[in-house]
Length: 343
Image (cartoon, rainbow, N blue to C red; front, top):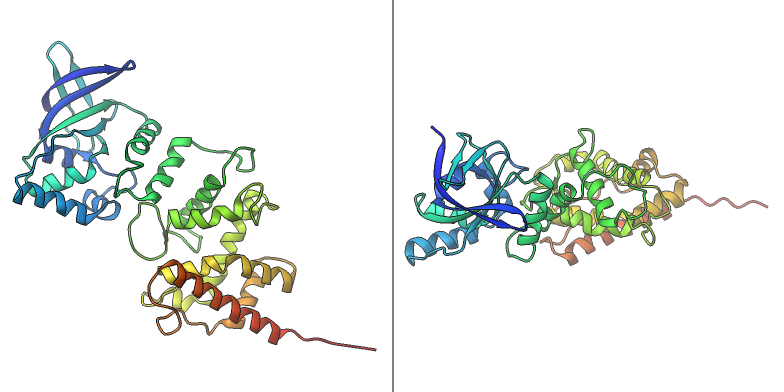
């Protein structure tokens, strides 16, 4: 392979240079990334975007002789291009990763599958920082169909930058909950290691957006149910909660047929979170792994399967699963409670 040379025209908007050029779907698909989180290009499309929508575009081009008159937006990374303004000549380096597709991911994949030589109009920003790319991606894609909410939350971390102290004033509940989910997902020793899906893909565990939507009600700095705890303590509560569940229900946790790590089971565990937290505190006056495990062992025969849980993963099914767990626990706690009366 050799460097790619294209005719390109420069436009300046608010002192920011932008290049306009025409190239085929193959070049954009093969040389630009669809996600900074997923290295494998095919997997990136499979996990982050809508297969039906891509198929719809492919059918539109092949069977309906459709056209794509609107442009694709990409960012070309710093150091991977040169531009001769007088010659209107853009030279792209010989590399598999020139930058990120900011807008038009579905169109690129659909056109590529229909005809790799299909010509597309491209607008390119030049050398934007990861933070600025995230900001532009969110601004453009936020109201469009098909881009997962989990991907937005993941990008918001890039957009807002690192936070040294999550107890500082002004740190939102959403950002706190996202940080808790990220740590649980990325820490090797975490019970939820690689079980929180950040790009909207399907599978075991839970999507980042679902985790954040529920957890933020607990960690909201003023009104959250865990607002009396510092951020690190809040994180520890979640970590202990899921670590103990994994320990008590390990056989089901490791069984791919079990519902414990599917939407209905995992959602039920999240719905039961605060009730179980309170039960541990009431019975043992301390929330730690040992006490949480002792409590859960009272219902260690609880089955996360189709015979015990409502099928499907909707809100009502998750609610019912959580209520069932809490009810079983409360009954078991009452039976385990010994009352001694003396003179």
